Image (cartoon, rainbow, N blue to C red; front, top):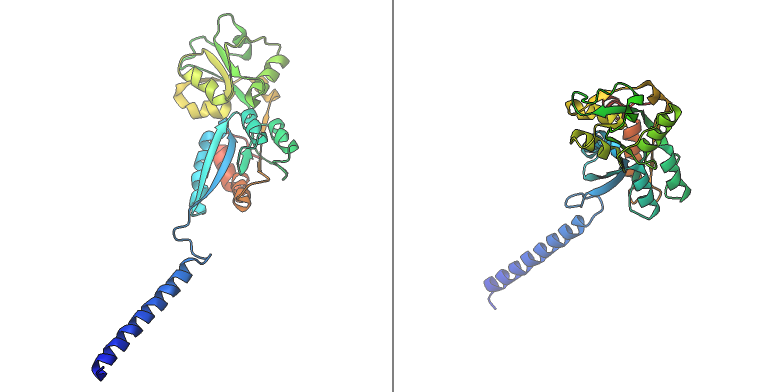
Length: 264
């Protein structure tokens, strides 16, 4: 082999070797734990009372902005339904209940081990279709014959509160329907299927001009307390605690107060 030809082969061999070395270094760097490129977002699952739908959805978006590569998903329903799902093993990271009783049910099974924190309170109000066609002016008016009244079922926090205030006031109501979530009660009133409903003041505020609101003083006799806690077997324990901190912190309290909740 001539000297010129040998030098050409040697040069090609060296170039291939260098290219392989560079490729090998690049492969090693891409598998490092410090790289976030291409990493699937962590999904934080929050079980929350139906009455928290709007404000928690907004706070979830805030949390995502503050925690890049994190996705917050919500399951909104009546607190009793959510507690039952958690006790049956449904995967979740955070539970926010509309009462302490349903939080206690989950705590007793061991799925909640941290001390729940109270972040808001809520009370009931009467809602009617716009203009209040049945001229309801007081809690006692809900007992009038022929009134299509809708309330929450007794096992749901808003239903428990409704039973408490009407019993204490000796008002014998005869609802045509008992719903599993306060949002369902509101929907029946806004759709014209009901003449009146008992919902939280926050739901009435959120409905705006779709309903007429009738406050009643007896509502102060049934104040619902909202606790929140991370789920013990959460796969994202740090994120769950940080979400709790957002809800119970200044930013969360401001959003809740704007939505009509009373905050600690």
